[in-house]
Image (cartoon, rainbow over all chains, first blue to last red; front, top):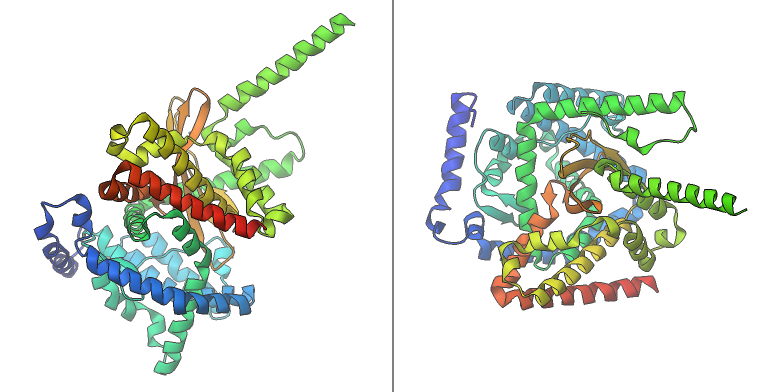
Length: 273
Length: 212
């Protein structure tokens, strides 16, 4: 809705048109056809991804998860997370969230130095919260609509807007500048495997819960990205909440240290608005 | 003697009453905190559950969580406008099957609990509200993974009850709506009931396998 400057406006206009042209002919059809006009194609990509996941990706991630000690996995996750934080910070600024932008770069600074090149996430320990932003999300915050739902080969659920932003996300990712190329590619594979390993359990859960997994994943995904964009739009409110929560925790801890084992009345847990 | 007996009975009654009043008066956020904590404590410490005893997880969910969930309302919301087209018998069966699917899924999530920690966001509500949202997040030790976990609760005659859960920004009922309407448009309400029943039978079989 609020476009900050002309190049951004032009860029989002292009993407909006791109997203728009695919939805025109489906007006008469049902609601699901509006958000997912390419359902047939998406379903076959989804089936392919599922097959690939079962036969290659998941077993590899499971193996990785079995042989790698927990602290090493955490280190690997932190290491790549540190690269993510750079692009997240850029996008925080683009979304007009100056405070998040500064804390994101502060995280990179702290973790790259005291955290041994990002292997330790000291910043989270120090209560500098981690965020996850990408360009697709930023465009969403600027008011660019999702466009049709897309399932990308290997990468999974996406929407047209985010897919269009993906190449720029790749160039914005600091890790993509690591050379030689072979090292970068190996790193990207490890990064993906580590990410998949983090979702081993939740994927199983999703398969248990769904009657039609394709629809279940799609509807959950679209809700999720929608709510992420809404949250970013309301980031001011969010920060106030965080400050409130911090104060509440401090008060509770203060209360705990001053009055130890006396019966804890439940009513006191309700903060007065 | 009888006087003392009477007094003790009266006292006991008083204590009991105050306990009941307290339970009905429990604020929604306090309720969520209490039952989550109770369940997490057991799930983390119980050796059988840690070893993968699914039956025990099911029992835990049934005793601690079920009394505070409004499955009737959840099913009505997930079926949306199709609910009114269902016969009373179909409605009963639908609630029954959806309830059992949700219990299986929730138990599955619970049996994966290891070293997660819960945090609650500040709760804003007016005392007169009958519909509120309690927001929390699950912190996992893995590379700053934070899972949003929010609840919607409605106030009924017997206190607050959960009727929707939000995981990572997606509401459960909203997500099931698509699944429900797809099954119904394919093969009617009976088709949906059949799909749910088959799903549950499959999950029950998996549970039995893991428990032995």
